[in-house]
Length: 169
Image (cartoon, rainbow, N blue to C red; front, side, top):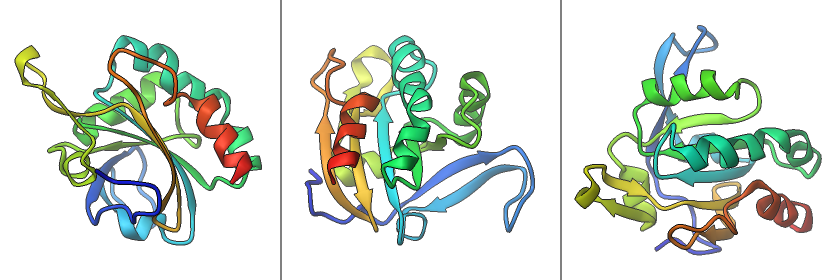
């Protein structure tokens, strides 16, 4: 399992882009983790799946609400990572109105979740392999803080916990 001080695994997440931009087309675009984190401080939170009740009602809104405070604490970007495809993450981004505040990144085949060792096996519930709920502060690709949520809890992966750590780091 990934730990504080480790470098994030080499993998590629996917992001749905609503508009064409510098080198990106409308639709799913690759986000190589090593390149996207280089020279940046990232507040990353991961969730088992998009559109789930707790994640839609508490996690994403909490990070949206504190986005400016994260920036003031030196965080360059906030990432939400989930084991969903980029189309689902794009739809969730529209639903949650995350544009310009939280990047919604899909880990469609759970490659990133598996590489970090932070998986949640929900095969018995028909949901397949998912990501644990966690948050981490990442600086230049290295994990500075890591908060792994106990099953069924909402105590350490929330925005307030990670924001306090970002301010202290």
